[in-house]
Length: 317
Image (cartoon, rainbow, N blue to C red; front, side, top):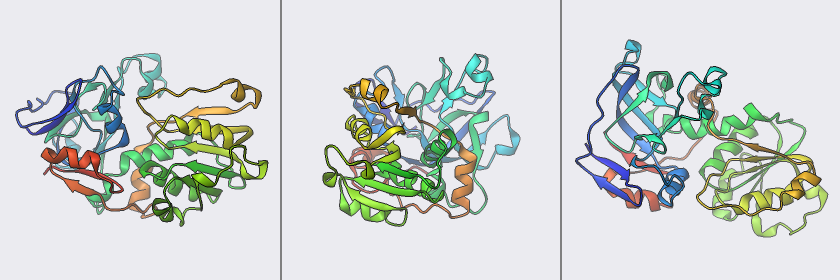
C-alpha cells in the first residue's frame, strides 16, 4: 500500500509498504483523510529517535473489519495511545501514561499516513451523522485543547494568556473563549493573530516588555508555541502563584532557571492528549470554527510538511 514513513533517519514515500493484517481486538481502518501535526514535523527532526514506521496520528477513516460489529462500515476517528491494559495507569484511567504504551505514528505502532491502519477497538470513535469528514479530522487536536479545562480550573473572572498563533493555539483559544474568561492571545505574526480576534484580545510578541508590569501578567499562561522559548516567556508572563500549562512538544531541550518557579510558587501543568467525545460534540454543534485544510496526495508529502497553510493533510481515498 501507499504510505509515508519515517525510517529512523528521514521521511520517505513508498508504494510497497505492507498492508496491515486484521487481528482480534483491533479495527482495520481504510484512511480517508490524514492531517499533518506539528508533532509529525518534530518526529522528522528526531523527536522520537527510536521510532520507525508509518507516520501520522490525526485521521478519519472507515472501519472495514472489527470485533465491534457496530463499527463496521462506520466513519471513525481514533485516539493515539494504546496501553497494556493491566498496569496501575491503565487500571486507573490513565492509559495514555502506561509505561508500555504504543502511540500511533510515534511509538511502536504504524500511523495513518497510509491507505490502511490498525487501531485498538477501544480507541475508535464513530463520527456523528452529518458531521463532514473535513471537519471531523480536527477531533484529535481539538481534544488536546479540551484537556486544558479538564486539568485546570479556568475561573471566568481570571485573565488567561495563550502564547502562540498556530493551529493548536487557535483551537485552545476557541475552547477557552467558550468559558468567558478574559483571554489574550500572544503571537509573532499579525496576519495570523487577526483570526483570533473572535476569541479575545491579541498582542504581538514584540510589544511585550522583558519584565512586564504586574497588570500585564496573567493568572494562567498556556504555552502553545511549539518552541523551547515558550516556557521562558510563560515564566515572565505568569503571576506569582499562577499556573503555566505546557502544550508544546519539540525535539530540542529547554534551558531554564527552575528556581524562579520555586520562589514564585508557580504551578506547571503538562498537558497532552484529551477527550474525543466532547471534541466531537463541539464540532457537531458548530461551536468551534476551523479553517479548511490544504489537501495533498501522499507522494506530495514534502509539500504537505512545508505548507504555510493553516493546516495541511493528505487526501487518501
